[in-house]
Each structure stands twice: as C-alpha cells, then as structure tokens.
Length: 213
Image (cartoon, rainbow, N blue to C red; front, side):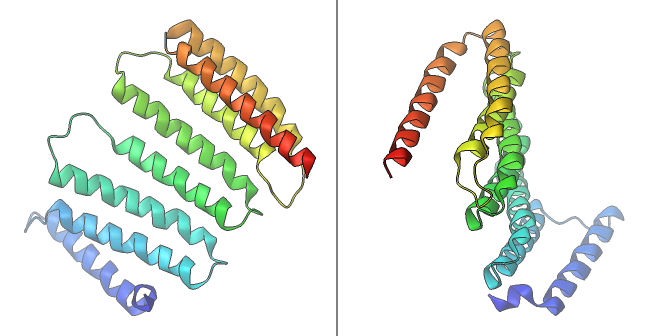
C-alpha cells in the first residue's frame, strides 16, 4: 500500500478534487456523490496507510477513520436517498469516537483518548436516540450517563500512568445526575437501572479477579 503514501499521487488527487469542485461551482458539469465518496474513502485509507507504515504515527487514525465515516454518509445519501431519518451525525460522531478508541488500543499510553472517545460515542448515542425516539426529551440524560461511564473506564482500564481512581469522582457525579435527568423525563429508566447494576457487578468481579493475582 505504499502507493497510498505517495506525495505525487496525493498531489494529483488534490489537484483533481479542486478542479472538479471548481467546475461544479461554475455549473459547468456535475459529478455524482459516488465520486466524492470514493475520493473521501481514498483519503481515509491514505491516512490509515500512514499509520500502518509506522505505528508511531497513531495520529493518522483520527483523520483516516473520520474521512471513512464521512465517505459512508455521502455514499448512503447517494445510493439510498430514500432512507428515513438523518443518520449523518450518528455515523460521523461514532466514527470519531471509534478513532479515539483505536488510538488507545494501539498504545495504552494514550489513555487520554478514552475521554474524547467517550464524549463522541455518547453524542453519537444521543443522536441515535433522537432518531429512534424523535419525541423523547431526555437524550441529554443519556449523554451524561455516557460521560459517567467514560470516566469510569478511565479509572478501570489499564494504563502506564498507574491508578486513575480520581476518575471515579466525576464518574459517580455524572452517573447520578444522568440517572436523575433520565428518570424525570422518560420511562426508559427501567432499562437504565439494570445496566447500572450489571456494570457495577462487572466492576466488582474485575476487582476481585485482580486481587487474586
């Protein structure tokens, strides 16, 4: 995949994209969305190839996965224009969140990536809830729950920096506030409490297994 990292190739692609974009704005001719989806997809693969060529370039994962997510949206809008709802926000935010998850998995020294990953995934989940339940008013509560779980993961997941128990404080506050907001505005809280209990049980089991080691 070295051709994906060729500066000459990328130079020509940028020039071609600029010319096509200019001609579209001048209304000389119009290209289909599939062209832009392919161009964005190639760009995403290009960034990922930079990372695959040298694992130290973990930063390339972020624009790579993000461009692939945007390419997915353009492709779906072009190929399936009659899909109900607007899923663009969910796909892009979820893609960015996935990128930060991969940044952490590649190198646990990047423990900080857990936080933006949790934020983006929580936003993606919030937009998903808005799409599935358009009349619901408690998506903000789910966002707070997502942030609480994010800080809980910061405290639980391994990292070279050592214990991050301080993260349990914002995690607890956000989870409580999120549950209160959710409980006040939607009957879906009936599903939230079992999830909280399951996560608490998993945490205790993990703590017990580590203590035995």
